Image 1: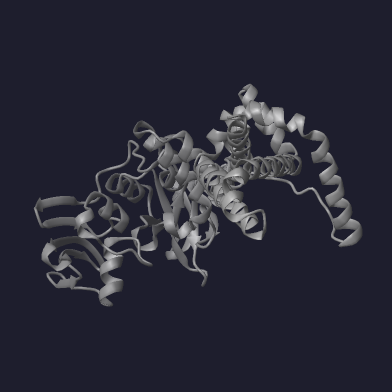
Image 2 (image 1 turned 30 degrees about the horizontal axis):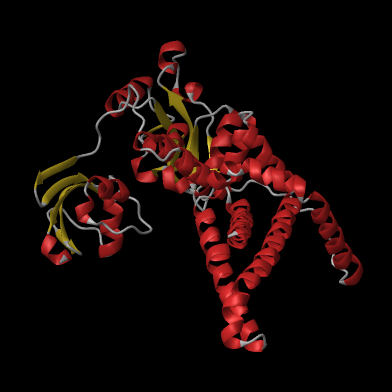
Length: 417
């Protein structure tokens, strides 16, 4: 009976050390750092392990080896009176001991604990913080000796430089922390906002800008009365000022200037920031903050105007659509019946897919519904023309010069089948 208890004890210890090792490697370090800042005892213990990761992993290795040696010894003693009467005390018995012991260790001492601890790594570390701390102290001497011997062999025998690598927090740690901390349904919005903020550095200015064809502008030679009319018609808070055309943007005028400092357009216009369309949104937001600005002209690779982007456009990439007192319902989005829809050509494809997933519009180098139709059909459809793409028929209901304004979409679900 005592032998069985010892076998189970050392098998459990082996599983504990194996699982703790993999949990330490795959745990969310940001979550642990947060616990430490919250002054929790377990958080401080686990953070202490990460301050000397080599020492902790060596402790797990030493503990696991001791447990395996003890398990093998007691398991052999248990099997001996069972195996030897039938197979003798020769090589065959030794092979049987080895086979049985190895299978048990691989399944119960390695595979199962490592799989489970890996799936619940951070939780397991905090759950076993005190036992881990105990074994860290108990095995300090053999661990220290093993580390010293390893460094000596690496440096003096193998001539390998030994450096203490810093275990920095990574983007993945932050993403995992967000997923772990905000897993409830009521936190979905918060999770989306934090995820959008993380992805900001991967988005280009061209992903969030108002394209050139949508810019509302006024010539610098226009009168103040004309400027007032543009503000009234567009309901925008800022109007771009050009010198002849959109490729010569000189600045912009805020509507409040008409109240506080009215004058000619040239006197009222303020300088505008120029940025390349390949610049990422995170850098642009930092530039806005540094320059105390909120609007920029986006320039393409040839030096021409690609579009306009504002601080609000960047914030909308994080928080979603932001409405202010000047925003109006610009875009048409209507479901007429089960398989028929009416959309503005400026609606973004991913937004339409989110609202009407049954349409399954493919994503590509375009952003808007208009861009999808033009790039996929390789033509600019005329008023009343129909274009069939996949399971959808797009009928052009309204056009303005080279822009598709309103599109009727007729979905054929049978094509999907």
